[in-house]
Image (cartoon, rainbow, N blue to C red; front, side, top):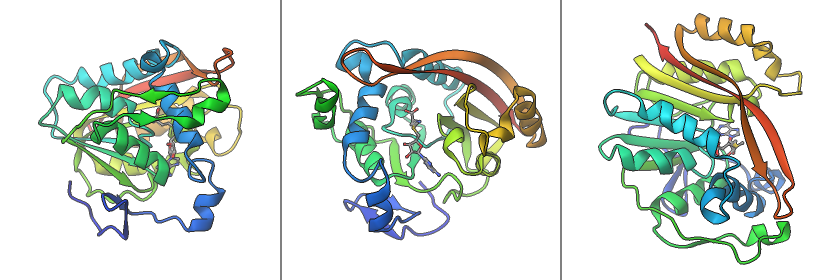
Length: 263
Ligand SMILES: C[S@@+](CC[C@H](N)C(=O)[O-])C[C@H]1O[C@@H](n2cnc3c(N)ncnc32)[C@H](O)[C@@H]1O
């Protein structure tokens, strides 16, 4: 994988760091102060394997299907805010000659994605015990040589312009302080004809900065301004995050968009 600048550090000697966080920033981040959030995210993303829950399957399978519908395997795919790597886990084995890059800002989420996608070792999830799932271990970790995990910000990508055939962002855009700047970064790295797949909650209640894309018409205008042609627009896809063994959950309605760049 080619980067536009050298890594400023490495996590565990193997994950390049491009947006270093100070120890204080990591201690203040719910993702990074320990592994409880990465454990819970692993449970959400892989709930179908861990405890037979299909709650998140509709979203992950929709995003993967939209990517894999590309007529021929692309050279390079970027998953922004890849989280624990569920979409990479599903798609990278289907296209072994394609280079997949997963980027996330959180050190511990990057560590977890690397363990799930590259270690081939059981991954214990002790953080799930306090939500009623003691002794949980994920036994399906893979060794995907065509996947690279890197720590970086989606708002300052270390990727060359026009270097990706597809960019994915599942549940990321709504987390960015400037989602329009995030979209600009995605378009910068996409080749003409490349695919952008966005999945993002449509019932988001926070006014700013998400308001840049509310109502849906505003989002259509932003995509058009970036030269993106909309191929698919799915509104209100149900996405349930099961958060404990008692059945409590957060329910989201997600908008999923597939668009083609610069045509
Ligand atoms: C709700 S999770 C979604 C994870 C994954 N895409 C999925 O759907 O399972 C949002 C992710 O975005 C990451 N994130 C937040 N801000 C980011 C940024 N500026 N750049 C890269 N990743 C970011 C978080 O660390 C977190 O892993």
